[in-house]
Image 1 (cartoon, rainbow, N blue to C red):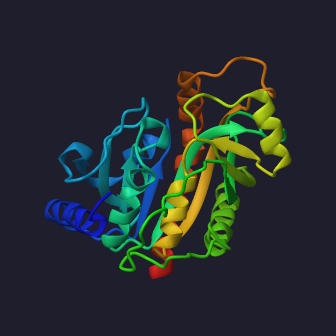
Image 2: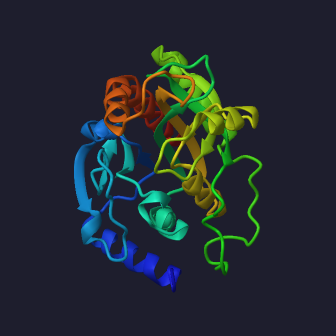
Length: 278
């Protein structure tokens, strides 16, 4: 995207003209996980179609709007609907909202997704704390000329998912009695589901779960100096592990069933940001 910085600032200027709060944390919601929005108090909705230069959602289960408001005393921005490389967007477009979030003053980002399980200790409905990622896509949102106003040419990825945020998320899960797994998320290009041979290879390379999002946003957020927490909802076991064929409708359905614990967990983590400030 040409003149990226100028375009981002145009988006920011428009958003700031519509809302009067500065979010402490942002949440990117995966397929079927949009019910967290129901817990936002005094919400302000901004459609992607109204924001200058913003991409548009095309996938079922992604509403296509930003929601500003308050959860348990903490100002939040929820991104209800994300963008995927397989939709035909460039990696810069996929991660464009993260650049906007940073320029809105947001330093903490919770990224969620619905994905397939490779680790056989998981089952559909398992919530997984993401500890690291593997990029199985031969593209990167940082390709091309670098604008130092955003971040450094060669950003570090030693801790893509902030260790302190992981610790806090585990503590919140324990307090709320929410069981969860932990693992490495593998980013796959899509939109077709993976073959059984690919899943065997990805598993041997260290992936515990596989999906078609999250990695680009994680890379961009780290580049921008944001702290990231990642949570996956395992909606199905990957090809070759489960016997039935995959469907996006089933992914959304399982995610909705798991959304009660998901919303409690993410809501608890957000509340913890408020305790930190007091």
